[in-house]
Image 1 (cartoon, rainbow, N blue to C red):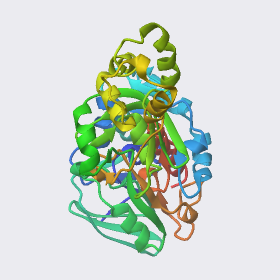
Image 2: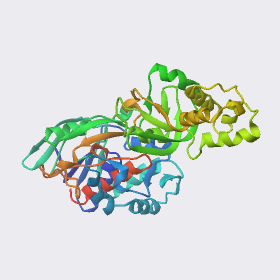
Image 3: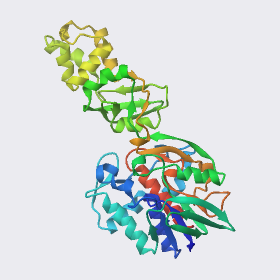
Image 4: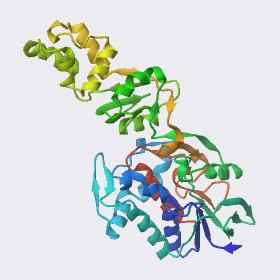
Length: 394
């Protein structure tokens, strides 16, 4: 049995960051991970460039049964704090849109930053370690694994969620929480494409690959970003964002021409381009295939002249464009979900330290906790902030 002060399960963003912080305090740290390569989810993030944080961390951009739980950690270790680490490592970066920060180079730069930080702090990384029995005896945690047994007075669970199982994601962290009597909020795929019944897909498939600026609304939450038509349904940032708020049986509404007033534009065009076919007139405002879809939704013949369309018909077409309502049947699931919604109930944790209130020495950080950020670097910032918080005290 190998002894340490702190055992960390999971060599992802939160786990590696917590390892470096705890190690800097002089704690003997061992990080266990089932994978042979640490930080795999970081490597594939952001199209291989890692959207490592977002300049805004407003509480309304995190989903949780208690959205304010994340505030303490996020305020104490901020995006600017992580940017300072990135700058100190000589990693160049850029802001895309909406405060999203990406590496100029490869996402592996962030993995290297984390591994070097943990190693410099004396943390030892053990990969290929499948976790077995876990116990708490006499104030110490013991973990059996395929790489041997380990024991420590503090245990940080940074095992992530269920998203992207092909890289080894599992529900291990939730099982550990349940073993120690902590509640787990129901989990589900989030930031994930939406799928539709065959009847809807017949109309959507011809548009596969087409992208438009859109507003997608699920429940009371709407997002103004790109929408992408796929062979399975709808994707793109606006849809991924809305998916976190969508529930089975509910419709979504889509504005396919965000920032325009299609009906007003077509009415104005009648005076100067009345002889143009309605489809051609609409295709000046929308991609041609999207225009054809909207006309079908409105029940209008696109071959008819624009001059022959009365205001009620153009208003109906405007509603088909700006208030298109459709009902998903599901999502693509954890296979393509960027994160997992739900997780270890924050009621069981101390928001300042991430420690389980009823189990001294047991900590949960990152995606395994019931804190889920929007698309755009929020979930990585939660990993840094929560890992930092636990690393200060574990």
